[in-house]
Amino acid sequence: MGLMNLLSMEQVSKTLKDSPLFEGVSLGIDLHERIGLIGANGSGKTTFLNLVTGRLEPDTGSISRNRELHISMLEQDPQFSSEMTVRDVLCQGTSDLSILLRRYRRCLENPVSEAELHYLTEQMEKHHGWEAENTYASLVSELGIGELDIPIHELSGGMRKKAALASALALQPNLLILDEPTNHLDIPTVQWLENYIISSNLGCIVVTHDRYFLDAACTKIFEIDRASIFSYEGNYSTFLEKRQQRNEIEQAGQQKIASVLRDELKWLRRGPRARTGKDKGRKQRLENLMDARIRKSHDMAKFSSGYRRLGKKVLELSSVKKSYDGTTVIEPFSYSFKQGERIGLIGPNGSGKTTFLDIISGHIGMDSGTADWGANTRWAYFDQLNRPFNEEMTVLECITRDREQIVFPEGGTVSASRFLEQFGFDASFHRISVSRLSGGERRRLYLLSILAQQPNFLMLDEPTNDLDIPTLARLEEYLNSFQGCALVVSHDRAFLDSTVDYLFIFDGSGNIQGFPGTCSDFFLEFGFSSREKKNGSSTSPSQSGSRRRKLSFKEQREFDSLLEFIEQLEAEKHTLEQEFLKPDDAIEEKSRRYQEVLSLIEESSQRWEYLAEIDENS
Image 1: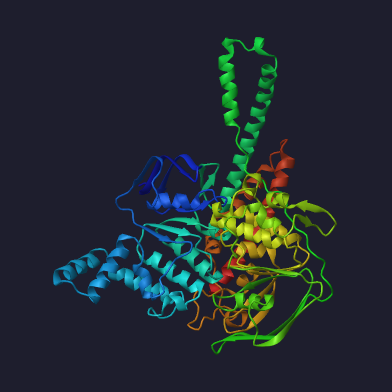
Image 2: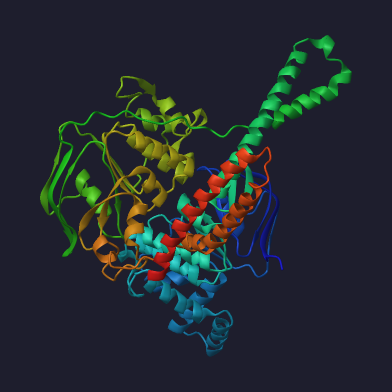
């Protein structure tokens, strides 16, 4: 029995701001498919989601929706009114069930008639309204938010995002849309969400820059590229392999087209006599070839920016302490930073990571202690506030307002325009106003304006939010070549694994502990808790060290398949041993394969034993 189709697009095109985002897109979305939607900032991901939900209609083509389709969406930046409580979040959506819940609650508060109350009660029973309320309350508790009657404005940004997430999950969709769901969520919650959607039977479309999330949770990738949508079966790793194959095919096609064009151009240059009327077909073929030349995706050159050399003293923190309303956010903390350190800050939402950076940068004061900067330390702070640019300024002016030239430590310089190009803003962007940029493009421009200050001590608070994957790759490249100090707050495990080699662990009770290693090293050693305590505390080495680590979803899947793989290797080993008794010309190749099989058997057996021990003790 095939999958139930939820939605189909047929030859859909859409143009916004005089720019064609999609042209002739045809695709289907089936129940149980978990689709990762990726593409550069401004490529049309949000527009695609709006077409799916019906907020936008296509310019041409058609979109067919199954009558059983029920969509629930987690917005990238959920908005709440100031008078709302956590309980109210479930009722604020535009889905049929949200509207029903809202009508039923209003009727209970201000009954109009017994007939209306009776009707709404029947509808609540028919559409499982009370089940949705119970599910929401359970999810809210599991995510550590606390009481349902807490005013939503009293919660942190991460907690508000969790309330919106709980609402989207509780509304019983068969197509769940998640627009940057990992933004503002702590790492344990991101991993919890991964496991939730993997174990559900929902269809899902997720827009995220979190490559680990895409790899673990998605079964299909939609890539928006050059006004088309390409579909790839498999997770993100499989997509990368297939995307590389597609690039190689396209490059080969481009080389062939270029060769034909060279011959045709020679023919054109012979003059009018050579181009008689009977060659109209040849002219048409030439025009078709020119149309077939694929505009190359902008390849951002290797990126770096200048920085000033650090002195012997970088930054000395001594007994820094901070409390809010009698609650300690940072217990007395001391640390001496050294050149070349790249430190990741991890911990639950509200545990003090941003407060820590705000204290260091001087944006807020500390209760006690000192922060002593070195004379040659030049810091820059990329915060979550996304300091606004003048909407009428051009992209180029946002960089040249600080300097026309970027100076490199080895003595070279680069122009501001070239600097923009190195970070994905080609010349077509330089003269347009900031008001025309997408949210992700603004975030990228803000990041670039920070790096253009040529810092040698860099603080990045959630730098991955709203950035596309190509931009993250350039930022990772920058940080890995950066010789100053860097402090990075991020929920993106792949980004942290790529850029930092030491961690500050915030436990939610004011304690900060050091951990030498990557983000994955930490969670592998100590496990994680997806549920925050009522007071906001969560995982720390001291808390989680006593927990028994369980196999992750990917590890469990690997564990389940290893024995069969080892049996296949043993069978191949036996076959090769039998063939050694029959001399032939392929003996050298078979001997090489035999050694490979022996190594694979040993490695796989050791891996199975390691996973089996974890599984047995969990």
